[in-house]
Length: 393
Image (cartoon, rainbow, N blue to C red):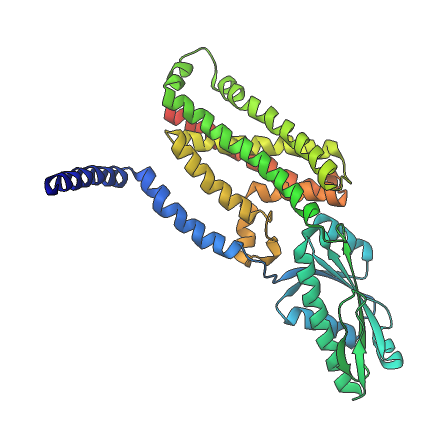
């Protein structure tokens, strides 16, 4: 019995040692099991948060008084809001909201300060981009609390008579001693009921298209390598352009079909709004799929097996999806992560899909993310083709 156990342990230790040496000597595997998880931990720990800070805010101040400036300064001094635009034009604010540049529009009407002194009450209008679902509710609660504190400050400064701050948003009133009562009237745009499905279903459609375009393209080329047929294809009369197009075109068609099917199910089952042009949506998807397929093809040129392709693709997709604003709003991420997320094509396609479906945005409003996707697609395809030539040479 002892001899059997000793033999078992010795054989297992020898085989395990051989596996350890194989992993240590294989640099690609070593990077996959050590470096990639560390990068995910460092980046995604900052991404997956629902805390909203530095929310982009547009100010429409018709009063231009000390009291109206106090409203803006109290919001920005909290560190939760930052002014990205200011004018006396509601149309400019609406355009910024439609483009997705701002989450909150603060409108201060004329005679705001005079109303505070004369009537002991004045209104502040808050328009929120409710497209962002639960984040809009968080932003609204922050703004209400800050303005309620400001109302208390005004009341204590002017007259010590107990009054209340009335909130048209439906939340409980805040007690505020004194004259300076600020009536806060909040409304949500694009998703006024804060429907979770209206926010998530368009993002999930993007995720499905991304999975099909990137994962299947990466595995397809890697499978050819494992089977040994890639070398045979390289010596056929096919040009590289013909070979790459033939390999990627079926997945492009499949991605477009899945997007159409998913959109139909989302509309029929979840009742998601379709306010914009379907032609613009599918045209944008056609461009984005070129990017997704290019990334998958690029991954396939750097790996040798399907297992490696799946691992690398999983790493890339995990980072892309969580940094895209699909699950957590980009406003809630640290500033450096927000800048880094500009490099993820998924973010720009999520922006386009939600803008077209929920806002009814047109070509002018989504032109910027479309241009970024076009540049991204050209760069990725060039890099992938160069890498393929290097590996097949």
